[in-house]
Amino acid sequence: MNNNSNYSPGVKRYVEEAKKWLAEQAALKERAKGWRFDTIAVHGLYSLAESLNRNQGAIIEPLYLATSQAYRDADELEAALAYLIPTWCYTRITNPTTYYLEWVLSLLESYKTGWDASCYVTSSGMSAIVMAIDPFLVKQKTGPEKINFVSSIQLYGGTYQLFSLRRGQERGIEVRWVLNPHDLEEWRAKIDEDTRFLYVEMPSNPQQAFTDIKALADLAHSWEIPLIVDATCATPALMRPIAYGADIVIHSLTKSMTSGGTAIGGALISRKPITTKIKNDHPLFKESFAEYVKLLPGRDHGPSPSPFNSFLTLLEIKTLRMKMDLLSRNAQQVAEYLQKHPRVYQVDYLGLPSFRYHELAKKYMKLVDSDDGTGKEVNRYGHLLSFRVEGPPENARKVFDRLQIIFRATDLGRIKSVATIPAISTHQQQGEEARRLADIPPQLIRLCVGAEDPVDIIADLEQALGSI
Ligand SMILES: *Cc1c(COP(=O)(O)O)cnc(C)c1O
Image (cartoon, rainbow, N blue to C red; front, side, top):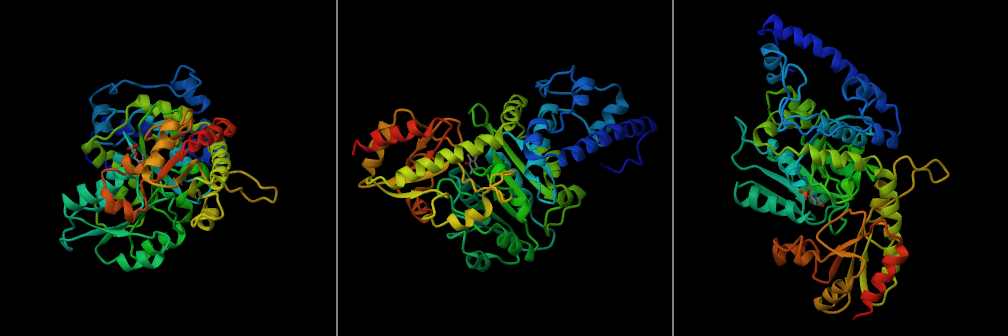
């Protein structure tokens, strides 16, 4: 909220009136904080009162497609556009359907973390990443010309391109790659006074690289910089990085959050406050970073989601926890089958004790609100796995081409099983050397296990592997 001392009495009346709505919303947030994960996922801030008093009693959050809001008079218009009162002024900035989605995500991501959070939903995962990093890559009045950030090299292909080409080559920002994200010493050696943030994807797509988030967050904070974590593959049902010190969490909502595969979307969720030494005059920058990005740079850059996509994602999130549980259990069975197959020389899955990130993942990947019988949450390792086919790359292509139930697509986190060969698809653009460093050989097939009966998925793999 801006300082409103220079505004007319009419404008101030709207500011007073808005306090009632703000208090109601604050009460709804407090109420939701007392609930368990599934209840938050189903209800969010959409209460019975919200439904009956403002939305014709609609039992599901309505889809507001209108681009803008009408105002009662000039005073209300002025108050809204100065951000003195909450407003749905224009869908590029705010929209009621997107608002409900932002609050569900913010509450789920901060669930049992001990922190409050805010959320900004964007048109795609990539736009959430750009919007998250750019505010830290600004020139400061005093300070060096040459700035850097440190990132794990195990990244989604698009993120790698954004960092290395768009920000590195085109804008002259130094990207310092960490090759082994689990090695804290490597991170430590790459940070200096001019480092603006640390960035890690976890589990990474497709390698499932993992890091000790807590130790990494402590390291970032010792330099007074934020840790940004892309936790798309985990979702808040399996891991909430804010609990371990992460400042900003990124999601591609396109993936498991909208597992039906009908919408592109992204989310930037920040804890309140974030750690940063960037000087920015706006109080929200540090106190509620996601809100700052939404109301200021977001307004000017315009990566807003379609309310229709927000609506689709909102519906799917209601059953997120049970879906992540089921997909993880199916993936575990499929991984165990593949591991025993003679034509497969390596299976990477966080749930396999032989996988190098298993121990770290065991510490962090747990089904929220589950109980193993002794009061501890059970481990669930997600839907993403990869396997490497014996012999030349042609063999992997043959197996891939023979799949009959599993869809061939560069997609991830679907309710149906989907496979791709990352070296020729998602990670094609980055070139052979970068693929070698990121450990993505052409023999590697990425498989995201869906909700089919795993017996049928295993049978499909069995016949496909039988072709070589
Ligand atoms: C897909 C993906 C992204 C990019 O998200 P889009 O919604 O496709 O823009 C970012 N990070 C990870 C881990 C992803 O899988």
